[in-house]
Image (cartoon, rainbow, N blue to C red; front, side, top):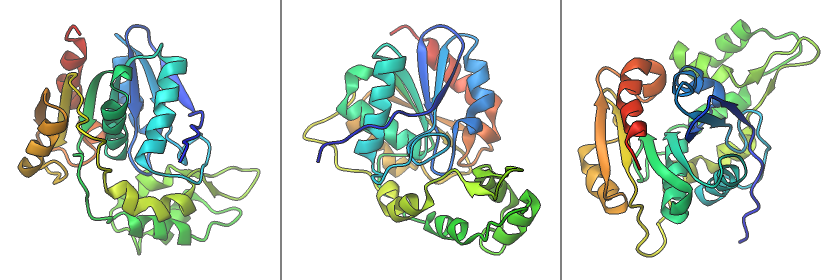
Length: 263
């Protein structure tokens, strides 16, 4: 099947070697504002909304080859054809697939709290809860939060998800996410496709995991090193899955020196 890439919405700031940032499932560029602003002191930072997220176009296909094709087009058109890539969770898998299938586009890779393995599709319930949220004209964020509380107990997670709702004075609230497509694709997003043939990426790779997260386990290291033989591993103390948001300073202390290593 031919992949027709979509033109991703992206923000740009700074000057220097290009760095492309990819958010995770239900995320957007705004989740990376603090880190992107810091990296912009030494790099040209391009933070993208992946398809069906944020300000990017909606599309019926939602798998890693399609999302990687979108990022490949972004790097070719806005980053001069080669960039360092940072990806969190789903965005990390997109970045890994891109590096394995289009390695010349990826100068180096930072993968945040995810491995190239299949996980249980636990976020299916989030997609269903969001689709069931009774958005109506005049609804305020606090009301939406209260309506989600029965399905999603953690207030921080609800706040993260509700960043995807437009509360406009001129119309009813609306999701920026393409929830119908995303919800159906959660099992695909939770998995990772089999890389073609003997594919591997020989560039420098940094795997950044949260200490309190179970996404990157010791048992995953062999799989990671088979596909990414130059991978190095860092664990950020005290951080959970959203490492860059929960512990931005320790995260940057790991990532900034890695980005500064000569190619």
